[in-house]
Image 1 (cartoon, rainbow, N blue to C red):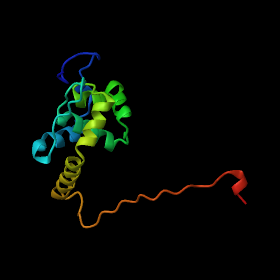
Image 2 (tube, rainbow, N blue to C red):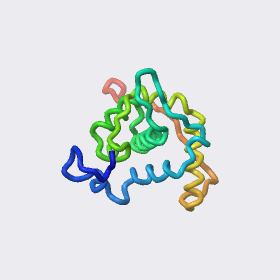
Image 3 (cartoon, rainbow, N blue to C red):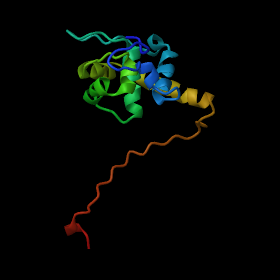
Length: 148
C-alpha cells in the first residue's frame, strides 16, 4: 500500500506523519542499509506470509526506540499505531513472523546497531569514546511492615 494513498482514514497516512517524526528517521536509516551484506534474509515460516527483512527491521527498530519489546505488542502496534501503519505500508505481520525474524538474525541485528553507532559518530552526535549500559535491577521494599 502506498502511504500517500487514501484508505482507512480520510487523510492519507503520509500527511499524518510529521516531516521530523522519529519514524521517518527509522525508515530512512533502514532504506540506506545493505541488508543482504549484513546477513538479513526474508522470513518464511510454514503457512506464514514472507515479509522483506527491511519491513521487519523497521518494525523492530521502531519498537526498540519506543519500548515495544514483545512480538505480540509489535503485532498489535501494526493494527492500531498510525506511525507503524505508515512504516509498514499497512502490512501486518503476525507475532510469530516478528519473533522468527529476531531469532534468526541475532548477528545481523548486532551489525545494524553497530552501523547506527557509526552513523551517529559520523554526524558528530556522539563521541564514541565511552559507552555504558546499566543493567542493575533493584527490588524495593516499601510495604508498611518494612518501614520503620
